[in-house]
Image 1 (tube, rainbow, N blue to C red):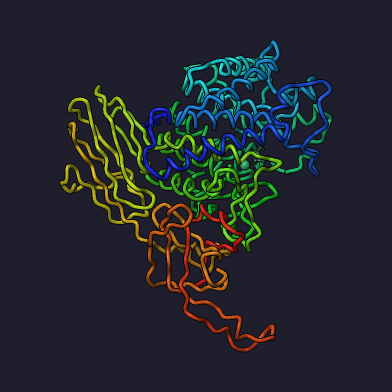
Image 2: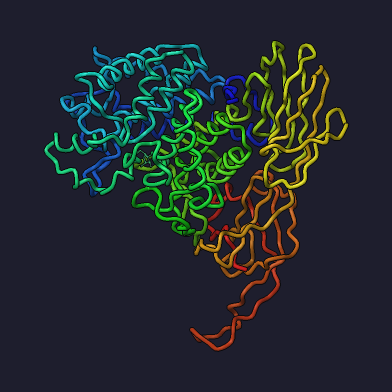
Length: 628
Ligand code: FUB
Ligand code: ZN
């Protein structure tokens, strides 16, 4: 039986790890993003003066300016800010959102259309280039922002604007005579429409999402026809293949993760949603095949993927270069969205494990400790020149990471008629209805630093239900106690399932195993041959030169030997890993470039920090995979 996620708005984050990130987002990230949106003219672009000012973001070699999707940045900022407001209300941020809504309301045309780029610069050519121009993508992000703002504040002015826009889109696109048979060139609106249906019961929105998903890849190919109608030769498409936007095949026939990584993940997220809503076996099978392809052959150890900058996406199996990894922050955020939906579709810990891996590593790496700097690409090795930046000509990742972190509470729990599943730990409180009773779960732990988890289960009356607790695959042997009594509970697909009559005062204790471990990559991953990576719990570690006497690429870490985890007060308080290693010597080498004897080595202690905290201090060489 599928599960429904418990929305972020019902979950109070109480643990230190995520509370610190949430406070940083509301205090620093959201305000600084607003400043950047102002400074770079993105908020002004909603005001539609005529004539419009010159392009701020020059066209790239394909004649494309990323300015075309500025509306999406505004939508994502509103969404991130709204989630952050559910952590702590802030009158100034709310006033800023209200002013943006004034502009959007003003910009919307009488028929409901709302895309500020087209309205300002190309009003007669709406919907003529779905392949490249992001109109439907922008609609999706604005819609998600509107839903979040309404959910948090109860104010529906923006939602009304977006619902009018959705009605307009549903008139333009669909199977009927005179309707366009297209679908988003950059997927996103599909999952936003499903969110709208979930939040409001708007069946037309669900039908439209279903139409877009089902229509993808149909022949004759919509993007070909559309290109011809523009007077272009479809074969001039710069990406040369519709794998780029996953429209090369009908979605149910897709088994390989290909093309642009963010597009792919948003699409798979919507497919997983529809598989659950419609009990659609074809979509579920496709999602499972795509999941296996991604996680078994095409994913970095940090939960990043899409190694190539040229298509911002996938290349070939086992191609996972470290120094040039693109591994876009947005792609991992979108993978978390997909993984959460797979968990709801089919409660299986492997989805939770990857959700957690992507979230704690590739996603969190995208935001600096101080909350104002970012990574777009998340390399796994650097000579120290890969630095965080304040803003980017394409700032998509900035607000993707902030919207995900600010809504992290929405990934903790799922419910169905049988009970409650807990997917994540780290200090959270939630009150739910189960089996006709109100139940509060209060989980306390110092996760991800420590693996002792305590859950106070407080039903308002005794009630029977199944409490499913995710036991991560990395944990090995774990113990579960209820009211101090060890439970002989089998782990069923990554979850310990405790079915019993729960009474006020019941306490569950889970003890996971968080020993540091070495990881080796599949031998076909050429980039990682002869290397190990270290992991403790959900966190993958990296060595930065700033913590070590020797540059990480001169260190050799043996295949075995003790690994030690110790608390450190650097970087706000972390668990650091140390290991006995050998440092190759350069001082005794002399002037020769080559010689007939190998370098000498000296014993050294290698110190590693969690990967997500890399590049928060002085410029420093870094490696995740250490040679053995
Ligand atoms: O095209 C919109 C967004 O900008 C994509 O999702 C990112 O990969 C970046 O290209
Ligand atoms: Zn991005």
